[in-house]
Amino acid sequence: MKKLFKNLSFGRVLIYLFLTVGAITMVFPFYWMITGAFKSGTEIISFPPVWFPTSFALTNFVEAFERAPFLSYFINSVVAMVGSVSICSFTTIVGAFAFSKLDFPFKNVLLALLLGLMMVPFEMIVITNFRTIIDLGLYDNILALIVPFTSSIFYMYILKGFFDSIPNSLYQAARVDGCSNWKYLWKVMVPIAKPSLVTIILLNAIASWNSFLWPSLAILNKVNKTLPFGLYSFVNEGGSRTELMMAASTIVVLPMIILFLFARKQIVNGVARGGLKG
Amino acid sequence: MKVTIKNLTKRFSDMTAVNDFSAVIESGELIALLGPSGCGKSTMLNMISGILAPTEGKIFFDDEDVTDLSPEKRGVGLVFQNYALYPHMTVLENICFPLEIKKVPKEERIARAKEMAKLVHVDTMLDRKPGQMSGGQQQRVAIARALVKQPRILLLDEPLSNLDARLRIEMREEIRRIQQETGVTTIFVTHDQEEAMSISDHIVLMKDGFLQQYAKPQELYDEPANCFVADFLGNPPINKANGVIKNGKIVLEGDCEVELEAAKNIAEGREVTLSMRAEAIIVGEAEKACVGTVEEVYVMGKEVLAYVSLGTTKVRAYIDAEKTFDKGQTVNIGLKKRGVFVFDKETGERLA
Ligand SMILES: Nc1ncnc2c1ncn2[C@@H]1O[C@H](COP(=O)(O)OP(=O)(O)O)[C@@H](O)[C@H]1O
Ligand SMILES: [Mg+2]
View 1 (cartoon, helix red, strand yellow):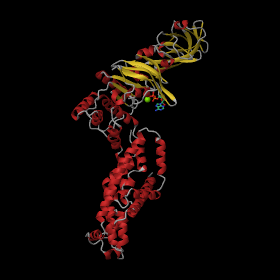
View 2 (cartoon, each protein chain N blue to C red; view 1 turned 90 degrees about the vertical axis):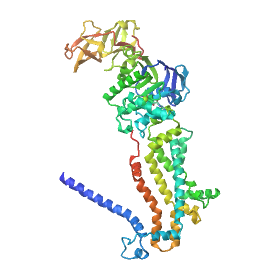
View 3 (tube, protein in one colour; view 1 turned 180 degrees about the vertical axis):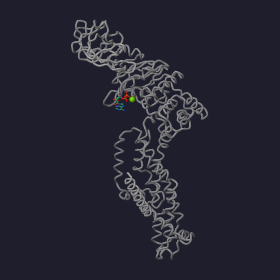
View 4 (cartoon, helix red, strand yellow; view 1 turned 90 degrees about the horizontal axis):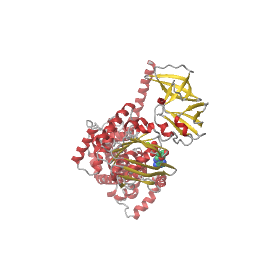
């Protein structure tokens, strides 16, 4: 018994050791990036490396902002994210509800078809999307970053799964009380599905914020670029000023880190809870 | 409100769940819709509430034909087996919800909801969420929510089957009390005969979508319309023995002749089922209907139960605690008038 206990605690130590190593591996690049943003040009290339920056002056950030329009990149990113995520969340909710609770002709065929479409990788749709955007006259327009992302089969399917787990008797009880489908969706389904929804919205927001391939194709002018694309151009044009790149990268990821810190509980809840207790 | 159901039929693609069902439910009564699982009780209830559209037939609330009326226009209150409370709302919000949809002013709906909460004794936990309440409490909230909009009829679909045995008895008395206090016409679905017997004014007994009998609980027990009804009610289950009518007597399998007044009018040679309730069989009676052999005697608290074989059939009978019988003893068996029935063996039709 004692021996077992000992083994157990030894195992624990191993696990924590493993987790610590994992955590450091994950966090270190971020640490390096953020501290790098505060280092001077000589500090960043010195060997042995400088672990802590000597000053926390924002000079690198200021310079990065001067060299490239990061503020407008940032605004473009926010506009594209808020636009696509809010519209996409709406279509996701409505679509999930329709597939989960309503009856209409060819429902299952349609769902199967949509799921089949999910198999097509994004890189393949890029070409058709590109044509569509040009035909719509939206090339090099911020709307080009919103329009193709106003619906998501994947998120809809995830949410449909959650909606399916909400007992039908809730729907019938509401119907008997005179609750319309619309009202039922927003007053009952959506609040119950909140944890899943928050997770979906966050994942979607992160994907939108980080997207690079599509903006790099659909956007031409500097004024319309988003942060990741802007950063890429900046790195290409800005040459070898590593500390400026670090500052610029920090600007790109900081909002997501803040978002995550605020919504951490929601994300974990959404992932852990999954189903609805009866 | 009086409910009239006329020739109601519901067919799903491959089966008929409710078959040519007709009944009249008097205003202010509590009716139990009783039957084994899968016999069409929920289907029936959902047609009355308007959730399901009948294939054929009509439903009237008083004199109004509601067959094609949508659920919200019928004024029904529904209570489900799994309570169906909105998990993200508090008790008060749950009870208020039907009124909110009806756009009742906020103050009025809160006042009415609180009044209902008081009626069902959940007024001390208005701020709780359903997840923080016991099954019985949740069920009370569900009843309050169904009643708050003052429905013309209250429908309960197996409202107690998720509760433990003691709570079930308590809650069924609660439901009876609430029903009596509000006077609302109520249909109560259950598969538990005891539940139905104990609280309802009338019982509708169903099987395979067909109405079997619609009567007062005691009448259902004393005068079953057919073999199924006799089987379904009573605990221990009714004793059954197959036999043939010969010279005005019933000859059970194993050559046991039973003399029964009621059997005299049944045609010679007809194959019958003799059904006897345990309390209708008197062991060791001078005035005998037949002769049997005592197989086993069980003492269960205040009651003594004997297993007696009549021919090849074993039956259960209650016996006097004072009388003692030995195993294997041959005894006279008397049959009371009440609790002894003869059915056609094939159709289950009542013959006597
Ligand atoms: N939507 C449906 N589609 C097909 N068959 C159904 C449907 N609903 C119920 N049934 C069938 O109808 C019969 C009666 O069901 P139900 O009314 O739920 O029985 P109960 O409530 O008495 O247990 C069952 O055999 C069930 O399988
Ligand atoms: Mg049922």
